[in-house]
Length: 275
Image 1 (tube, one colour):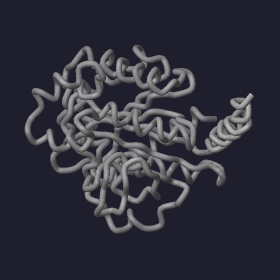
Image 2: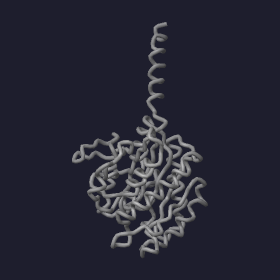
Image 3: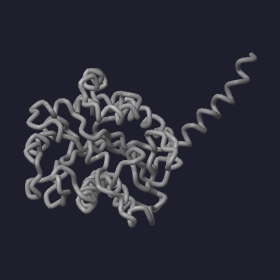
Image 4: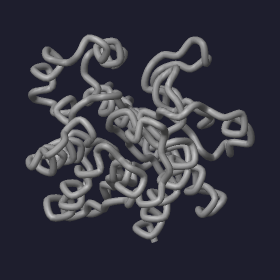
């Protein structure tokens, strides 16, 4: 009899937890290498007037920004780690907010590592890749406790208490040039995310952006032929064109205007899918 006294309390706690999730808080996971991490310097105009409906969950502790891992903040750049630059997600989120109803919020979780191969996000074999990674990359990986994939899942599970995961954004490939198995490797990561987060493929699209285009002299533009095949491997995957998106002097990274246009294109595709 005594145990029955706890049933109403348990029911109330479960009910409160279910109502805490805001169905109008759209969450997007993003991962990849430097162009998703954010390479362009943050301009003064990028830090003002950011709509509070656009949120970022910090994936690492950033004392200098007064941000704590696992907490939501207004999405003022940087949106990846403490000292990264402008990224695709900056302008993806701003475009989404501009076109969604005013009672809808957008949240970004960005776990990316400059220069990494897609193998870094392979949950079963990432440690083999880390063991051979260049020394300059190790510090970035360490910020995610050595396992960026697990950090993305950890943050995503926290975010699922607050809102609904609506899509996954990827920008990676420069470090996997001419890798004919790249699409299968991406599918492995995508399938693992769906399984680990209890998501359904038909309701969580994967958007993958092209590397700097040949029309800008992109040094990795040849990878775009492989990226183009991703929808043949993942049914709910879509490729975002980088044609005309301006780049930096290294012909590897986009500049601020390039990120702005590419992020807008990601958003336009996602908005069409949400409709």
